[in-house]
Length: 410
Ligand SMILES: *[C@@H]1O[C@H](CO)[C@@H](O)[C@H](O)[C@H]1NC(C)=O
Ligand SMILES: *[C@@H]1O[C@H](CO)[C@@H](O)[C@H](O)[C@H]1NC(C)=O
Ligand SMILES: *[C@@H]1O[C@H](CO)[C@@H](O)[C@H](O)[C@H]1NC(C)=O
Ligand SMILES: *[C@@H]1O[C@H](CO)[C@@H](O)[C@H](O)[C@H]1NC(C)=O
Image 1 (cartoon, rainbow, N blue to C red):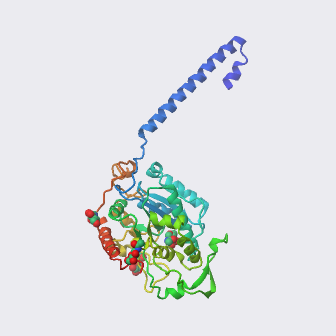
Image 2: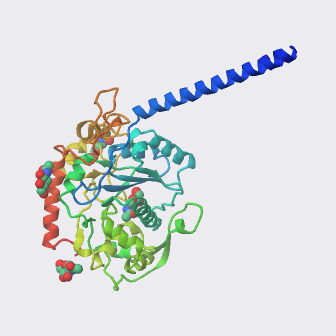
Image 3: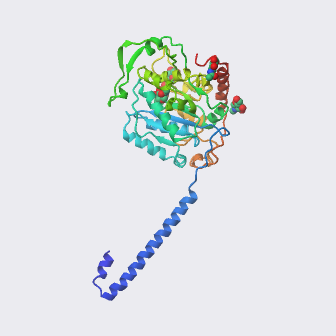
């Protein structure tokens, strides 16, 4: 512009020549920039990897839908847990409850997008509009039903839904888990349950509570009614662990609701304390279609204090041996970045800091400066390690129990 302004003072001829000259310079610049953009993009294309095609269905290893949920201050734990259970074949839905800030939710989404495989396979989502998770209230069941509905809708490939919280951690790799579950009928559900209510009948079944998370904007505690109500006799009340591994077909039954049982029980459980310890258990065991597809186990390693408190004991390195020998797939609960998590990372998952757990899908070199999972091969191949054996053995026992029909929905 300065150059052009100076040329205005020159003669008309000079001005005309200059116009031609500057037009030539401008077109040369445009030409050069087009070339450089072209070169840059072709360089990008040649180094960029396209995700290998994920195949689902009976001849292929099973796939899991993970719902990982936490609250305020749990962003970093969720990222760590996601990397520990990550596999391109699976689907992940991350949820930071309404007590977490929008900022934390955005940071979670950014951290997830920072993982090359996640960007390429596009199989991780962060719930944008959070749900309330009232302590002991029914909003927990609502949040989980919503997660199941979202996962059913966005991904038609997964076989099992697994519920994890930010306090949980896996005890084996996803290759191990997929190997063990490739010997399991895909319509089976893993849910710890009993109808032997004991003290719970008076303290958990008969009290009536109201969850403010379903109608008040501000977080508060559940309300306890002074009246109690009789134990149901229109259906049998089952209770158990809230940590579940449910089949796709059972969740379709719960979410789509062509049979009214899941809906009527949902209405009843709205006023039950700790409804997440009874809702799915009661629905599955009262439905003729699913009660015989129910394995009585939650596949988790948990240690309760004696007498049990509301939350299980925090696991640490003194629990390591028992925990890995237990034949469970996941353990809970852990303090943030506890040393025992590093032990699991290095001894079992072989996972580097800020990297996904390696599996047969990772095709890169493994060194301290290159992440083996920044390059990938065939994601439909799995390669189980020695840790798979323990879960495999406990699975064999569980399936024998299930076949005997003596331990399920009793
Ligand atoms: C599923 O996960 C959530 C979040 O960690 C938890 O509150 C709930 O108890 C779990 N189980 C069910 C059945 O909702
Ligand atoms: C489930 O098992 C019970 C006994 O174990 C049997 O009576 C019932 O008919 C079975 N239901 C279905 C739908 O197979
Ligand atoms: C680890 O857990 C045990 C209980 O199993 C407890 O006695 C011990 O104090 C814990 N250690 C640490 C370092 O927290
Ligand atoms: C797991 O068990 C199945 C049979 O149930 C068997 O075919 C497979 O080899 C076992 N895998 C391991 C790692 O033990």
